[in-house]
Image (cartoon, rainbow, N blue to C red; front, side, top):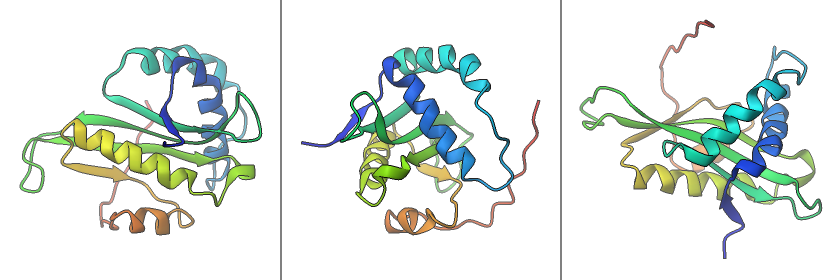
Length: 155
């Protein structure tokens, strides 16, 4: 039996807590959790109804009601190309493990479930941004570094 389960709307606050753990570890991240209250209703709604939004979690073994790890991704359509003619692409945008639950294989188990979920939805590729600490995990799952010069704009 897998420790991993699909996240439910009742997990939303814990997903935000673990996402904040990930954000806080990023260089140059903005501190603070004021945005959680505004994000919570939308996250609950997405967890309840969005078939293209996948969140997989492991419950914390020592803290009832808390999560030990999460991965979150979406399936998007992009115009096809030679490597992915149907244009469905998975994008992983949150992977976090509670500091007290690290080195137990939880992130790997969650990633394996998310990758299977992407396959079931017909995604021909999966993209993510890797921190140096997480890169060995992703490489062991078959991810390779791309020369993509991604840029961003906040609207």
